[in-house]
Image (cartoon, rainbow, N blue to C red; front, side):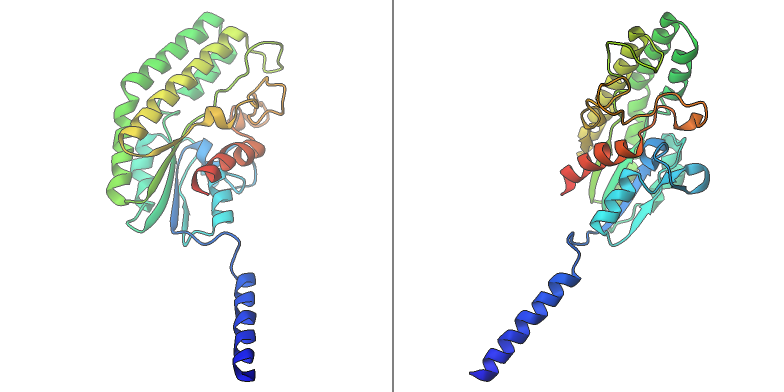
Length: 261
């Protein structure tokens, strides 16, 4: 009996030690993060990766830090378009990849130029440029997204989460952003069109969609709560209209964690 009791106590002691040794979040399979500057974390600071501006505060890095994947490849790069994902990023996805996040399409549709135009031109010119971007998003972007999504699925049967972009502005009232409600509304309409196209193509491929509009709701530029997006910044122009560190963490990462656990 004493021998049995000793063995039982020893077993419980071993289990207790193992409980302290195992991380609170069990390790997952390989994770690959693809995409553009929103995915790389431009605007969130603490960069690596040279011109790709991969931030230690980006949602992909935060997810990897908290979930301890067996391997993590942070391939997203500032300025990327769909062709860059195909040529330079998707090769990181392999058959053992358990999770892929991909956020791409905004640069293809020219939304950086949209923001420049709306900051430097009239209301009517801003609306016209947004209409051009929206037409591109509806007509040309779906085929480009299909190429990316097909390439991902050909490489892995793992979970794929397509990440969408937020609306840029809260409408109504004054705002130091300097744009009229007409311009803000046109920009937000473009975000809605882009979300519709991206989510539609994601669903067609059986991928899940993380809606950036809901993730950032109440924290857009000109909202009464703290902004999770930078307005125009002359001192760091490439960070303009990108998520802040809080946007990456409290917006994107929180939503991603809600989808994956």
